[in-house]
Length: 374
Ligand code: CUA
Image: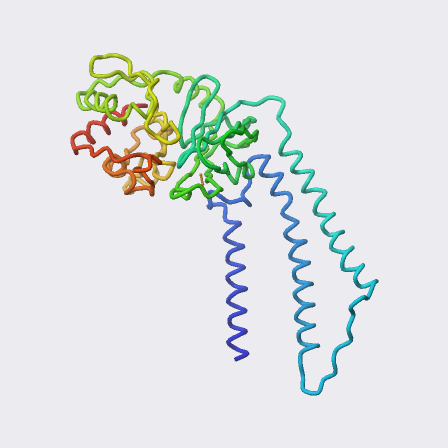
């Protein structure tokens, strides 16, 4: 009996240690212990509070175990001495925890204040949460989805809101969480000290695809960012090959009521009119103007490009660095064939992308068009 209990205890301790070491693994892209921006480092600096909590937890745990053993029920044992109404003891166990909490509160509150200080200079990005993707808009009129591109080493001021329900913007290695609430705009700040990819996640349950509402922040060196910023402000690439031209035509008839592609034209060569109301609950769908320049799609759930296992030393999945990134055609086609089979959605309820019942040749043409939107 005792051995089984010890085994269980050892197992639980082992699992706990495993979980702790797992947390400090920097390969984990959403690792709060792997802070990389100075905001998340401020939060990481508070990790000593865990040590204080562990010390208190161990003291309380040992005291409980000792009390359980010492004062356990035994035949003929007298009733233990009662301490009810013991003034000095009650004062001690009121004042001591209050002191511990005060010690923890001072740096915590100071950090909360620091995290909410607006930087003197920053680039502003409007962030809109929606079931189930994120929209990012820049001051030069660029609107993108799922992937936020920022200059490394610079302050970024976010204006966070939502179009439908409450979401929460969270990129653990760049800063803590900030709720996205309809009708409110919340200020939040991020900064990536180094170029790189930072993954995030909606952190407020918001319906069926809450777990698929991901964020990819790409911090580029300043010069690369400036180029991206200018390129994104241009209208979409005009298709030249026949399939892509057919794709643009299908887009203008079937997709343009929800998705904006700046510069797209209809079959008659007229610019697509985006002023019509869209048949969605939230009234918006991802802007696809430079769709093929992104590395992810569908709430950042799927990579838009794939790695070739034959050439492990070349990253073909990165549209920024790969010369000929390999399009994730199977997933993109599957997405157009039946979106809610790829990511849980309620298209009948107009939450998420509807199934347009496209034919296989229409899907091929649309993929040809989308893949050219660099
Ligand atoms: Cu949006 Cu959870």
